[in-house]
Length: 509
Image (cartoon, rainbow, N blue to C red; front, side, top):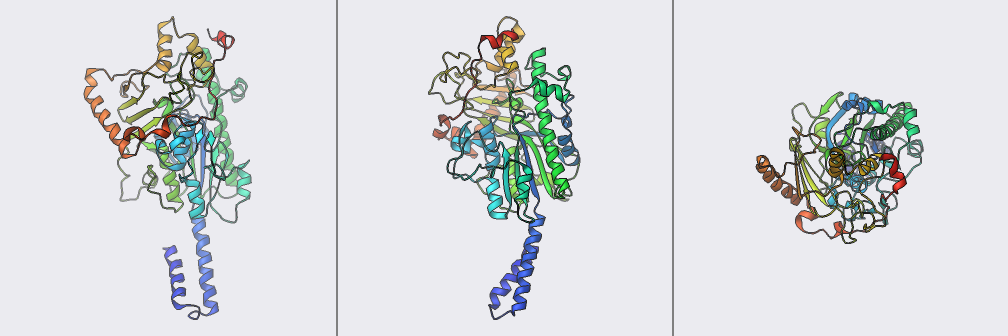
């Protein structure tokens, strides 16, 4: 309504022409326009997006984790909205972050569907749209989009880089709203025992999921991961304190999440929940009803259209994400939008970790519903986490390259044969997988028992096996429509986890 009045004043002035209004009247019109523009700017909320690196679900106090201490996230959840089924588009940093920025499924990003690639120049991202079409100040600190190369862009797709959040706030003009991306490097490996001790985390209290061995080395590894989660949470708390001190917190929507699951075997770079499910809380004073928990499926591609909607920018048609506004601020008469009863995810090349230089990676797609996880492995003859035979690796000394090196990986390798249970755990993370995997989440929430060949699940396998490619074709997945040249072997600009040597592995035997 306010914008309509401003438009009306302009139309009157244009209709009457220079002689139709006295100088004082024209000045009054201009002043009303100026006031209206300032009011519009003030009504648009600031957007603070706090994005962790390798932080997975359910590692926060708000989800019932008994060990990790996350008071900032818990506050946002208690005073805002907590999402219990938030998933990423791809469980790898570069494609996941690109999908968030573009609001599109990762496979639509060309080379950027892969780790350590190049971001396409023709893909629009929400920070630039907010800046160009709604006057937002945009910026990021630390890890924005990436790792990768940005081509001819003048700055990272997440926005211009700043050393500190306060530096970014100080350079804004007047009441200009902002959209800031705080990209922490926590809790990415490597980890520190000293930080864990400083945080006071006792490895004896951590919960070890059943896909990992419950031994002291793994408990310490998880506890060290928790220490970095806590450091990330504390830093976000300081950002909120800064905004509170400046009187800007109340007009800020705060979103806190992670770019994919934790960096443990069968987690990061895998389509099981440990790799794709992430924490998500959204806090928006006076607009979002406090204390709600939302169980509908959401994908982090939904954030870009959400940010554009709250910033008053039309959502581009190419965005495949759905705005979350129907969930965040449902009207009194409207029920939240349906159709959020599943999520589709996938991955392409994480690292060049196979034995043949002609193999691009390990392409996979998955359909996650309430009761089932259906996974399609396109090349079951390849290694899902990279070759274990480092002497044969296409990349020099590449060793299980799609899983970050660390104590848990070392322990599983050291016990890959002999004791049957540890051998089974090793193979679940690193052995080759069949073309189709199917998990019944009602009885197997950690997705450890593949029932794809069980006759009792034949109908489910058929139904989901038909539904997944249909959904992929609708969303222009090159794997589904047969146009995938940019997905197979784009340039790779990074390193790869490599064989650590027998001396490193000796303590884990």
